[in-house]
Amino acid sequence: METYQEVRYVAGRRRTTDVYAISGKKILMEGTFIKTARLKDEYESDVSEPDVLIQALVDFKCRADIFTFWDRVPTGTKHPYFCEPQIQALLPVESYELWWRSLDRRVRKIVRRSVKRGVGEVIGFIKMIYRDKFADPVMFIAKMLHSRKYPSNLLIAKAVERCAEKGLPFIHYSDWRIGTHGDFLRRNGFRKFKVNRYYVPLTGKGKLALQLGIHKSIRSRIPEGARIRLQKVRGTFYRLKFRLIGKKLDEIESEVDR
Image 1: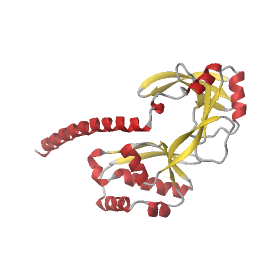
Image 2 (image 1 turned 45 degrees about the vertical axis):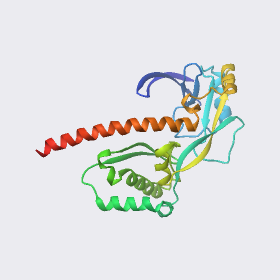
Image 3 (image 1 turned 30 degrees about the vertical axis):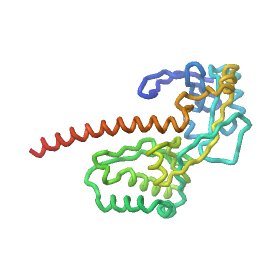
Image 4 (image 1 turned 120 degrees about the vertical axis):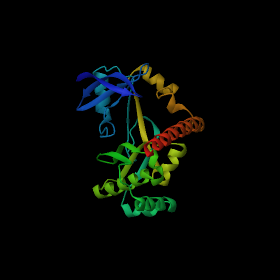
């Protein structure tokens, strides 16, 4: 086993994390009081033999209390460990034509209108990583100034087209979102899929954490209704912020015109 430290940025903060190389896998340690081990690149590969990896973690006496792994896409296989459903936003891709026909009529109208309007500059881009089971859009940016040209819808359409060409069955958008973000995903063909997230205690503290239900972050334990209310408050804040930014942009444009 090899171990080293890696600098990561979590919520904009610089943190040093322990990484273990075990059985050809890189295991990342997270958490403070309850330390959780997971694959460093869990979006790229599955844990095909969890028993072997779990035993290696125990034998090497890693500082983790819990080891967690998941099914990246829905599967019929289930391992004999404690698991909880994790709701993912996945867009099934069989062909571009099937996706297009499944869309709401208003979304198809938006995409057609956007194509007709055209653009003369970069107004958005999407960076996708093509993995073995899905495409992962790790960066998705569109300019608010050109929101009436609906660049986000066009980017998703292009992503579906590329995935269909490559024969990838899903576009993976991460955990399902709520509020207007969730509505946007649903209108563009994304659906809720339940995948299994497994938690294996490695220490007595880890076992107790699972029994008490404190093995996950505080944010993930907030009920959906409360999260929706908090999101509405945040939405009000951002609308005010963008309104102020819009006024500044208008002032800049007027200065340029003169």
